[in-house]
Image 1 (cartoon, one colour):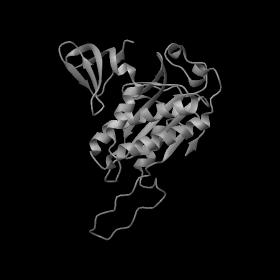
Image 2: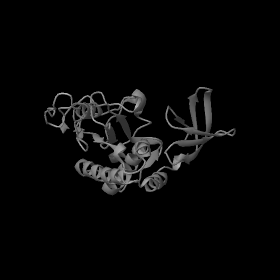
Image 3: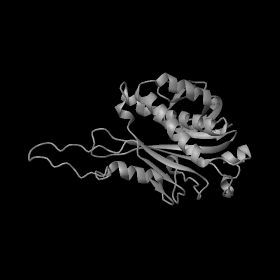
Image 4: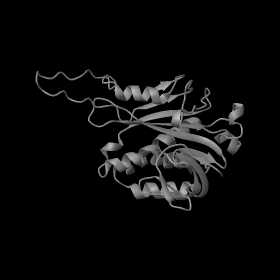
Length: 263
């Protein structure tokens, strides 16, 4: 579904996945005393917009989404139906999406992307794109997950607070980028890596993510936990996609929260 302007593609995709009418079919009537049949949510549904007025990233951060300047896409997926270890598939979904987007950008433009744990796409020290995965509650027996992604494509005037922190494909390449082709490549790559996830090919996803993520080893990071502010050096990721950070006293396993990268 395409929207010229929308508040948030993730919100629209979540509403589609959560609503029993989203599939376009009326609820199935059931006999008295029998159990209702869970509706099937629209896995694979894609929401794409030319502009977001309330785009967002992780932990409530806003996402600058001016008209016609980037890709703003959300896809409904169900990693919990993986053939082996569904919980691990859910945990690795964001990393799998990151690999897919890095591969798609490289295929469409030739530009190599750095992935930064857990969900950001970088070129050098500047952010090019991001991923936001959000679980959705609905009446089905297996909850869907909305995977949203934004990629800066055109070279546009950025807000002052983003000038030194963000970049775009056209800014980096110095030429026009075919946004339609990039969109197609992202969906194709996401489909391939999602198939890997459902098929239990976790090691292949993790190995690919590590190749695109140099900052996962040897970068200094800070974060806050129950003990206060912590600081250490990244030591890669484990088999569930958690970031490992060595503080000198022990190795911390980071699964969420806000990190400050000092690179």
